[in-house]
Image 1: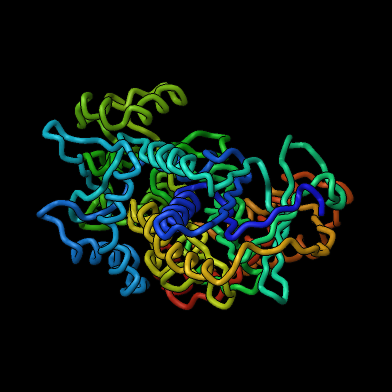
Image 2: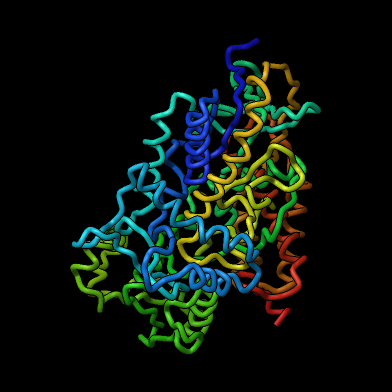
Length: 518
């Protein structure tokens, strides 16, 4: 058997909060019961290159006497436009405080007050201050904590810069996975051979592949967010749920000619920053009583309305009434980024912002333990999954806690079958040649941005679907392809699925807004 052929009990694709937390909970459970376990974490880029590491705001969990589970549940349902699964909402929110204690046990560094208690802040859509954070770089602190904890287990192996390109499940239920080392961005492949690929097999597989933001021209996501898990799950027979429920963050930093967008955290509005139009008017009270702290879908649509009225490409976020001390203590990275990118002193000048693609509220349909509906031994955790928590719009800072608690529940389910036998014996599997089509990424991104954005029409959705579908059907198969070519192919497939789902929606809820359904 070739040396680049390996077998594990469990393979986890993705090294953000969902993937890392799943590995930790599995390793801890195995150690506690004196079980042997082998876990492989696979990262397409460096292990720290995840959307988790970019998260600014924080982690939502009830912790104060004024707050309650019922209040957090109500806020989540309100933001989700009632499309949430109430059972899942309650289950996640009631599990959140214990999950925070797990993070604290693992050593996470979070901001505290002078008296030593944790500094909880408020974000849009929340009635109370329940956001645990580390200044405006909570994700960086979380990522570092989880990676450190992972490194303490010999049972966890992590391979970086390795892209999964094929997944198959045989008649015996074994997953066969083919991966390539992404050594350079322009490295090309023809057919994958023993010399340039890795064959991995496992009894249980976790998709923790994160978002799909790169299907849009402007996104807050990292460049790795190409919807890989959506395509893999579809090929394995999974069902997608509400894939067109795409959340746009209201306050991406406006920079002309930039595809990647720097996020301006909602916590800045929680501290008192106000959205203003070109004339300087605080316009949000005209759209919602919660003003600048309304849920993201409402704020994003309001901003787009103001942009259309003013005929400019952005509105302003005014943080000048927030004290310089608060800015320096809680938002140092945002302050530095605005200074560096636009030469703006946010203590004195308004910040130009516009809504940008941020988070997929739908995804692979899973049960209450993260198990993929219809595919045994397959799990989907984190943004790639549709759990029922977010409904039609994610409440700020609910995503990181979702990844942690579902990782914990999935680990309990995955650890039990390990008692049934030893690790899988290596077995040969004949992978099919990978056919990568020549897709123009700009075409995909423009289609989604122009026809499946914040406000849609049925005619536009049909136009976008037909354009993408035709492009994919007529695309040439590449004789030589790079990882970027492969990702472009995936993006087109994901875009087609988004349009199909959008066309199947029958009512406006949360982030989904079709002018023809008003």
